[in-house]
Length: 445
Image (cartoon, rainbow, N blue to C red; front, side, top):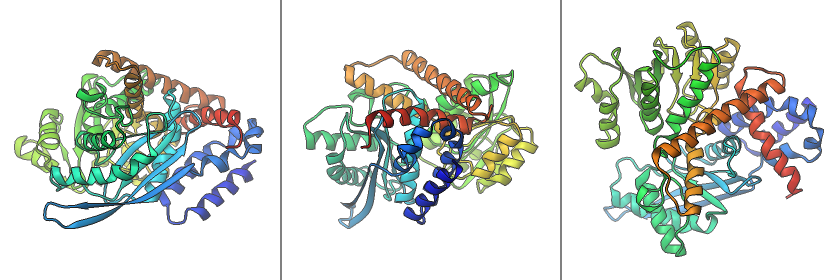
């Protein structure tokens, strides 16, 4: 049976040369599914693994646009529609210079299982472009988004493929994308999530990834006989996920002492002031080092890696993939960290994740712990379909229940398949099983 997994992984590596992130994600998921195929040989007979690692559709297109000086630029864009067995493709759009097809495939593959874990009817997909919105004027971003959507609109729809935001795609970009989609199709539908509240957006969507990750972590801590109250916390990043991870952790009684951006990190023994971070990052769009000019007792350090050398009880990597490696994991373990929850996509390297599991650190993998964002996107889709808008408390309660259910289903799957406490295996298996059953029921398509 192990040969089956190894053979599929060999095909993945041959078909996707150079796509290291996608290969890494495939290895991590498929290795954890070995006990599933011992119990369910019918999945192997239906070639479910061969089918699930191959996207249903890969769309690559150019995006020409004109800057404020009249110069023409051309970017490359992608939409990977990975799996629609349990619902329309669902996943964000990332605008960042690092975007390539391998990263988008990795994100889309992860999205399949993450969306499945929410219990909502959403398949998995992802998209993006190597365009960098930083330093661009609003008019330049608008022209780019309009050109981007002029191609993408052919491939998406409320019951087909529903993109959302991701790195580099916030409320401004979603607004421009939605406006162009509406102009081209003459349809006002829930085709994009993360919309503004005035035109179909959902309350809690902004907070959802961070809030959801903390809700998941709180469940892990409960199983250790403790809670977030009184914990010292590290949060990498200072974007949306990081800010609202800080906010919810603080509401639950924790103290966040460090945050970062791509240049470096700040340490504030008195607790990082969230109002200052919001002002710097959401309003003024400045670097995090400006924090120490306002809070004199805080310290700024160039470079991001050493944030994990700080003493903490709980760590939330919220920045980007592979930001926390094995060496950083060992530093956290040595300093007494008892829980790590991924608010970003695959921020821990495989050796880091393995170190946490082996040393009994409660570890929430991204596809489970950071599913709050897409869960609330699914709730936005529901509200759009009903032409309703739920209040903040109602939506937050839905989110909380979903995150508790994700934790419980991951925990139960880990126990059922012989690795109790290993939420990496549990989340992969629980997410896979729903998709696998749906694929089996729908035949060879």
